[in-house]
Image (cartoon, rainbow, N blue to C red; front, side, top):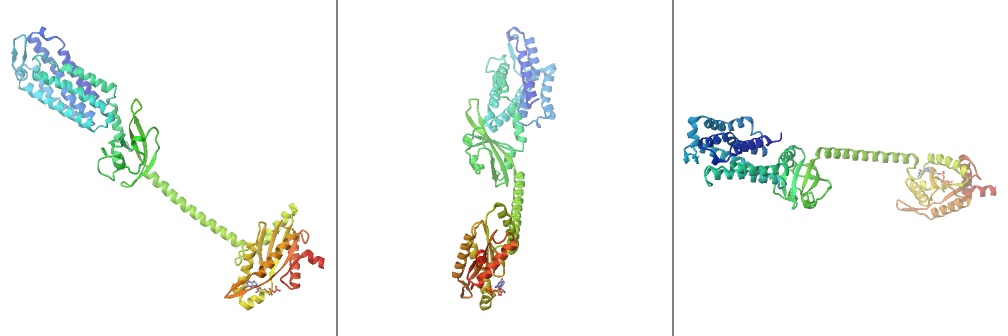
Length: 503
Ligand SMILES: Nc1nc2c(ncn2[C@@H]2O[C@H](COP(=O)(O)OP(=O)(O)OP(=O)(O)O)[C@@H](O)[C@H]2O)c(=O)[nH]1
């Protein structure tokens, strides 16, 4: 059974019994019958005030205070009163003297009656005070049923005061009428506004680990649960009454405008060092008018920290992978490149030439090779030193790289010899390009130790398939042509064909 339901039933049972005892019109009763009715009403009368207090305690979330021991204490006074009602020697103490004519009068009320009345008023005032306090603290959205309760319960109280103080003619008790009106208010609170549902919801909201903030349309916080305080605990001040902009400045969506299925946002609460998943839910009344919003704050710090640690580990792995790949690339390049000139090395040349010759055989495209040798290179070394010889080799390598086209493969064959594979290049074009390189290198001046060094080169050109179908034969033909170029005085380009023709 929901909190507050049993004492509420007890209150109406008491009030109902009270009303029943007054149901018979008074003027038709003689004094003895009237006294009997009065006494019979007491079991109902004494039940009402304790029931109101227990209901107020339970309804305002103090069920633990309304324990059976406390209820037993509350029932001591009704027990004493019922003893006084049923035991004739105590009647004077309770009812006092009879006033008026024997058939038409009323009891003045003895000291016990007034003590009982004041005691019950005190219980009712405490219960009422708890309800007023609850009303003031309650979110405006849940205030309506409490409001109905407060109005409803005030009516029989006021009616009883009017009766007891004889504001109306003595002998008439209008309190039961007050309870009848009260029942209408309580029924409306129960059936229309779900009197007990908000209590259940409040319990859930109090207990859940997600923070809940209720915000009005102006962005002012009207309610919050303990979890919200915990999540936002960087600030010890109460949340209620403060503006959302002050409490959650990180959240930029204007609270009053959040509507429908609003977007979730992730915010960091610096004060409590927490990451929060913030989900706004709009609150609308039956006509669809926006009344405010509920913000649900879910603490996602653990998930977030795990995700960040994973991301960090991923980044480190990516960096390590990149370093490994760079190293592999470097190793691959070192394996196929000549360190001094940056051109491909002899090993790569041999592998590639073989592969490209097979390809040329399949496609029928031409393939030319140019074998280059620097003239009198020993003399350069001897005159300017080995380092300057290296600089000249680097200058030639750089020039060949710069003049390379797509399909050219410039390689250092060894010492001061270079081979350029010209894929898909005809004999004629290969001769022209070798001639260009010769002329450009001859015009080049390489600066070393403050001295400008000039050198020339000789080149031999051979073409697949005219001068050889295999790698060795083609290189041999190019070497022969180079030999011829050297023999012709150096700084010269000779073709294997031209050489053969000459021969
Ligand atoms: N600086 C330097 N010299 C090298 C390198 N590799 C080979 N040499 C030198 O290149 C020279 C080649 O000399 P030779 O084969 O006699 O030919 P050459 O002096 O160029 O004469 P011709 O080719 O007939 O014009 C040798 O002195 C080698 O020591 C190198 O990596 N750096």
